[in-house]
Image (cartoon, rainbow, N blue to C red; front, side):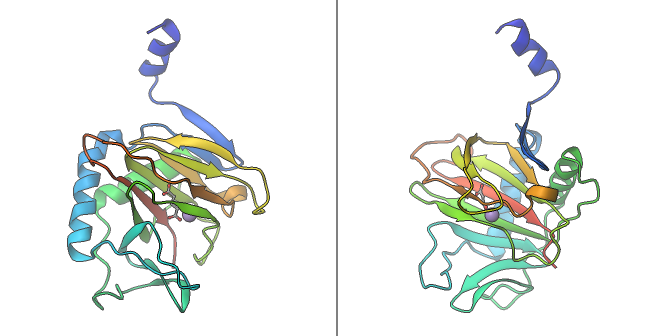
Length: 216
Ligand SMILES: O=C(O)CCC(=O)C(=O)O
Ligand SMILES: [Mn+2]
């Protein structure tokens, strides 16, 4: 370790600019990694992970569930937020306090001090799962940012621009990393390349992603 590394370690994890209003906060979720994973398990015990279908009829490779006042769903009728889990008819599980606190603190650090998420989509990737380039545009009000937390196996995250054809940059997202995008980049295209095989001490062969939104 040289002096530069020591200085970096002393001043906390790095912060990388990804574009206007978009920032990668390395390691911001590490301090609450166990509580976050316990929260995911508690939510999934009530609202199990499922592979939903796109409006075009394709089964998504990513398994999903949600918590908070609304959950993101897709089926033949389209993409939308629902207050109840269609699988059970019951309201989505409440958002664990540790989720909301991390989302709020991360958004504030990225320059969005008043973010209070009402929805958290939980994505679970097994090796081979991917999420193609898309915009998050099913929310009511785009003045609120997206906060995305990565846990478990690393992935390659693509972050582009306002048009699907804009060039994309690739970022390796590792366990504990948080990405926030809002303001001018709120509707930027993004996606996740096929997850590679691996083994993580806390999640085994899986990657989890929490995306916090202001949906309603
Ligand atoms: O898994 C990720 O890092 C991104 C997930 C995502 O873009 C989404 O759920 O809309
Ligand atoms: Mn997205």
